[in-house]
Image 1 (spheres, one colour):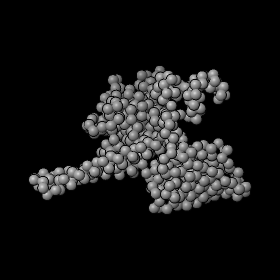
Image 2 (spheres, helix red, strand yellow):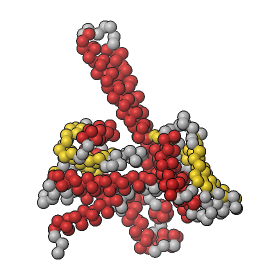
Image 3 (cartoon, one colour):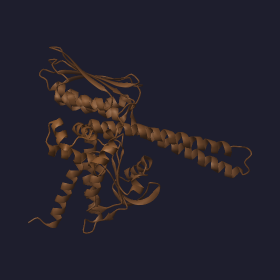
Length: 422
């Protein structure tokens, strides 16, 4: 007979399964719910460099989640990395306040912070709770890493816009604070100031503040961008198993080392597209050689993958069509050219700028293509039966899509949904 402890373990397994099945935008909330029976907490904070557009994933108390910064979480990660093990009861600064926290770092380098941790009633001992959450966090962190690697076009679009907006906020803050601090320094350096000691101390404080501010800006830039040469090295590492175990002759054409840094989403999407393209090409009969090239013209990441196969691959191939959708999500394009008997070439252009990306509500809500079709008809005043007829689907399927749209938009009825869409 299964005892209560085994049932609790099975419940945890089921909960974590629901977490790793969640989207990247929902994973923090799902993980917070899964951990509540083990560790009660006021907020759950995740910091991962795998997800450059949204390196923070948060759930819980808005007074914490709305104000915690990347810089604060980076400091916490550094402290725990130095200790080399999970910590319960560590006082950390988050949202500009010191709070007790339980902290874990996954092998991927991703950080998990539970603020104000309390052992759940009838749960595990503190040591067992630390070990249990560590195991679960390893699974979730790997899931995040894998989801980023194969992110959907909708998530790529959202993440790209988030990176652009965050970079603009950081730039504005840096300029404003730098100007203020420079004015303070100019005033304090004035020879008319009376107290030399006070003036010197103030100068040192202001100078130190400027250094910290620049460090925050630089740190954000390292998260948001990836040098083109390093991005290509990571791509080569991704493809190494195919070269080593697949018997392929792969020629890599290196990008210029001084090329413009790539936005994180472009680097991730580029690698994912190349991996998918390589798999599509080698799935053809007779492919023995591949040529993979990256370049950057200052405004676009340019990708070329060529094989020596039958030359029959087209954009109509489902796997290639999916790759094209990813490129389009970043305002890019993918084309396929083949010559019978001489091979196929897949060419990709990904703009480095986020200008022109879709900022409509439907894009922000992360709707699928079919949900967007339903939403547009709904906004035109169509009822379920008419929508079902127009899209050749059942009324029950329409209701299913409408329910998903209400949830994603955070509204309670169709009128509110249409109003928010407009």
